[in-house]
Length: 614
Image 1 (cartoon, rainbow, N blue to C red):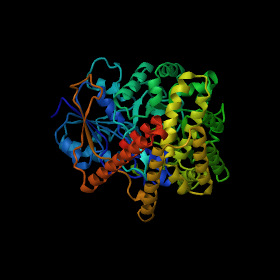
Image 2 (image 1 turned 90 degrees about the vertical axis):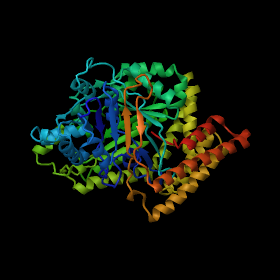
Image 3 (image 1 turned 120 degrees about the vertical axis):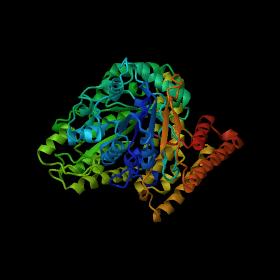
């Protein structure tokens, strides 16, 4: 029995697919840019809950991320004393199979189940079957619980989240294997908002649990800046940053004092309509950008939600909030839900079009889904309105809810139609991103804030140029004439605001157009969503030997990739290195026409395939 090392794991592959045959691990493709055709962003992500646990206990940990069954069984057969599984409800069938194997092969092992799968498991099965599969169902914040379980002292010592693996994304027509350019950490967990459909509210008992102080927040940003120079955006988990004004003040003080960081990266925040509006009313809309926020996830939920007790959007029209943010160059991820009890055939399209009118840069359209353990689930269960669906159907697009006015298929169709409507009205998210970034450049160039005018505008120029190089492809393959005209107007605007594209940009634009055309031909006979994305298996080793190091883990790739995959990856890496060299040559040969600030940024993005995030 291995007593001195803990095994942490995600569920084993293969994973179930979502209703449109999307991958569970491709957040950009399944949600935020879904429906953008060849401009859909293909992304990769990681299981950060396990990484945070591994970093914050004294014992060494082995972390399996996306193992295949044989990888998992090989590790279990080593007889670990403690095995922790972090999962979502959609994985529970597979998780129980994993637990059965552990019970059979290593009966003395203590099995822990955490994250939202634990919440759903406890709500659905109660106490009786619990010990059959797991020894502890861990609800709430896991670090303190885990330290206590292991008998460690100082349970409340600071929580570390050092340089976890990077996420990344790129247009599917450009790259199958985008590099990592998005950092990640958690500033706080839980929400006092009290929405009945919210799993997070229940998981953390309606309270916020601070994971990082504001000082620790900026220290983590500095670590990404110093050690991961390719990171352009940091995704910061929190239910609503705009509830915590003093916290944001401290971050702004740091941000404004460090123009080097302002020029290179920004961060992704979460907020609600009313709390953003209230914050802006107190401190001004400019203040939000001065904090370093580059993008915000905003739960619009529904035009009519406020009339039915959901008070997140009573103080200001959502469309105005989005407009104010976009004016200052802040990208938005708008969230909308279909299938409320108040949704009828008379108002559902009005509601959807209200959301479309918000002009979100990215979007998340989901069905109202009663997750086990929530207030909504208990209410609908009592009313006999929860279908007994398999676990693989418990997710944001679940068919578990029996609607009052709509057929089940209608709610899924409406979310798919919503993505289509956004694409055919405003164009792909990349086009909307270009628009918002140009807004930011124009706005802050006129600002009295010298720091923002001299430094933030550099980042906007670079981001605009990087998006501009796919504009020829967006023009040619626009879904209709309305969007095609928008692309052309955006190209004209770029020239008016920033200037003529450099020769390096023109070369990159031609290449993007070429590969987009090739992709479009291939997709005609071999549609890309036949093959939902799968993540490679990685084994992370937290051996605790170098506790002062910036990166507290080593990464192993136990699998030898298939010859075809290795060839594809080699070809893509080589292709972009060659392209980067060509662009570099053009930059130097036509040096009198170049713009080092833009061209160097572009060359770096091409060489390392760090294209777009949020």
